[in-house]
Length: 150
Image (cartoon, rainbow, N blue to C red; front, side, top):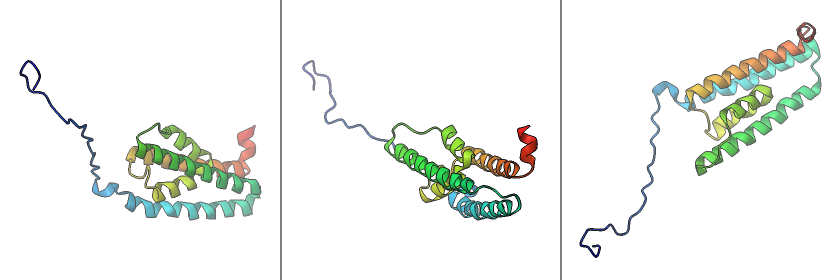
């Protein structure tokens, strides 16, 4: 009680609300994860065939590997920041890293770290960047490159 006779709270604690994630049946990341892993070997086949047909320089494989490692690290940093409720890496940055060739690392990160694997809007944009990257790779590796650069 206060000196003027009013009731006063003692030992007050802040209660942290835990959000429950509700998933639709078809939006389970585990269902999408297995299919996602097939994209990497499928691209390896496309890469190998393109290299055999049009002689893709070996540094391009290094570019994909390096971009994938960087992309995985960025996903890990964003997952850590999300868990700590601190500054996050923007989705546009993650998508841009995938677009420039880091998407194989992003797929691995999405499944291993369970990060960005459930948000349908992000996943749709992500797969659009994967398709754009693969089409760009094939176009720039083929004789079509001469038409695109002139």
